[in-house]
Length: 377
Image (cartoon, rainbow, N blue to C red; front, side, top):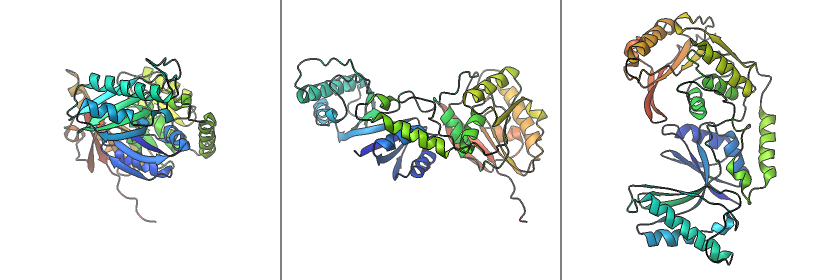
């Protein structure tokens, strides 16, 4: 069966996710925070296993205009819920409404739930409430500018939960956002890669997974594994194919530094959980003591932002040290994420390019300092 599918992601990462969907072999259409594509059950499994930058993969059951609760009820009831939900399905309904006449989200949820119950009761010839004692099918009704979209979440816990991070620091990056930071650079697996403020090691771990072509969803479970219409062999086949595509023999030069020895131990533990202990070297080193001897490479850093009272001066001192150490490394590209929009002043150089991104709800800029091109041989 062919499904209309939807991948969601953080604002600003749409182009990356679209490129990933294309790489899986599917045509896509991009909107704000969304990438639409079509595919069968294998596409659902592949998207969940392979997408590094997405949050979720959803099946679109239907879309229609709804400006009254009667229109919402009838529109939901007309959809083919029996194609997806067995009689005993548990189907919690989440609801969102933005810039729409039906702005009461609790009412939108309740009416959607009632309409689905009515549809299933009619199809399965049942009266009254449904038992909902079976597997869970997470549903969402989202109304944007009076257009209702009904979806089934195939992912479960967000795709950023890869399964390898058993310990984390004070302000950890989500795994899919860390992967995006790596994918927005000019890094190739044959180049040195350094994260000088590594924290729990998420950026180097994601870089290693990219470098070895490891699918990010290999270690986790998904909501669709419980769906009656999904053959369980499909996911196993997708994971087996992903394992065959991994390049475990590739030599990587990836390092993560941090001033805090406790964070270095946490990073090592997470890398071990990811099966990447041999691919990454973690070391306790202060930024001002970084000694990078290779002529070319890539630095990616998510340093402290100095958002808390009294911490901005310390953060800007760190940015100043970064500038003093990294500016002379003209063969290295530097990519630094921070919410301090005055970063360039402390660093001591204007960025080649700035890209606006959202780290959760925090507005940040990705300051990019591109390396000088190597002379032609």
